[in-house]
Image (cartoon, rainbow over the protein chains, first blue to last red):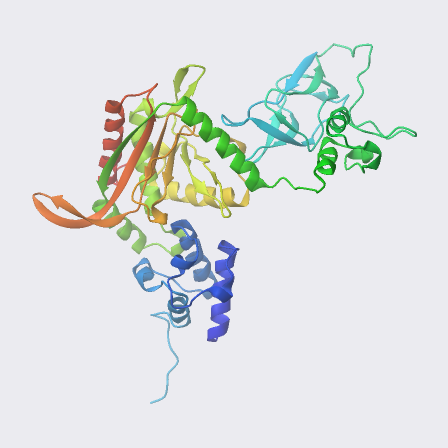
Length: 89
Length: 366
C-alpha cells in the first residue's frame, strides 16, 4: 500500500468515528486529538479500526508515538516486527 | 372501559411522540402486549398493555407529541361491550365530500387560522394530521430532529434538578499509580480490541462503593428515598453534534473490569447510533460523568433526578504528590461527588468518596 492509499484508509476510519471531519483541513503534523474531538473511547475505536484494516497489532506501548496523521502513516506502513523484504546486499 | 394513558417511560420523560400503533380498534390484546411505539428524546420505546381487553378506540395519531398522562386509547374490559355511541376511529377512511381531518388537527387549525382545504394530509388514507397543520402554519416543514429533542430533555431534567434537589458537593484527589500500573499490565497482553480504559476502572470503583453506601444509590420519588438493591450505573455519554445521554450498565457492582469495559464500549456505540434499549435509559440508579478527556481538572455535575448522586471525574494527570513524607510525581484524578441532601449528609458522602478512592488503590480486588 503506498502512502496516499494508506492515508486514505486512515481518514476513512477517522470519518466513520467523527463524520464531521474534513480531511482537507487536517494538519498531518499536528496531534489528531488536538484537531478532532475524539475522547478516549473514540481513539480506542479508531485504533481498533486501523488494526483491523491494516492487520497490524498496535501495542499500548506505542500509543505515545501515534499522535499525528504522519505518525500513523509511518507506523502502519512499516510496523515493527513485520518481516521486511531484503533490500539487496 | 379501560383508559390507556401515555406512561412515563423514564424518570425524566415529560412527553412522547407516537411513532406507530401496533394495534387497531377491535383487536383483542393481553396484558404485556405492545400497544404502541413512542419516541422519547432518548430512544424509541414500546408501550405495553397493563390489561387484557379489546381495543375500542385510538385517540392520538402517529406523529403527535403528547405529555405524559395523556389519554391515548380506550380498551373494553373482557366481557364489556362497546357503548351505544360507537366511537369513531380517528383515522377514518376518506369519505366523498368530507375532508378527513383528525379532531386534534381541526382544533389546531382553528387556533392557528390554517385553511384545511389547502392542506395535503400525510396521515393514513390522506388524513390531515396535527403535524400537517403545524407545519403549514410555520410555513416550512421543520423536521423534529433528535438533537433538538435531546436538548429539550436535558433542559427539563436539569432545571428540575437544580430547582428541587438540594445538592452538596465534595471533592477529593485520588492517586492512580496502582490503577495505572494495573492497566498497563492488563493491556500489555491484550489485542487492541480488548483493551481497557481507565474509565472502566473508575466505573467499577464507583459501583463497588455504591453497593456499600445505599444512600447514594436509588431514587427519590414521591417524597421518599427508595434505595436500589442493584447498581445500575449511568454513564454520561456525549453525542457528536451536542447533547448527552446517560444510559446504565445494569448490575455494575458484580461485573469485572473487563465486563464493565465491554458494556461501556457497547453503550457508547449504541448511544451514538440511537439504538439504546428501554431499560438502559430508564433504570440508572447512580451516574458517573467523566470529562477527563476534555482536559478539565474537575467536574461539579448536576444530579439526574430522581437519582440522588452523581460522580464527576476530571483529567488524569501527573501531579506532585506527597508519598511517605517525600515529594513524588504520580497520576492523579479529581473526583467530585454531588449528592442529594434530602437523602444523605456530607459525612456519608465523604465516606462514599473515600471508598471510591480506596477501591482505585486495589483495582484487581474482586
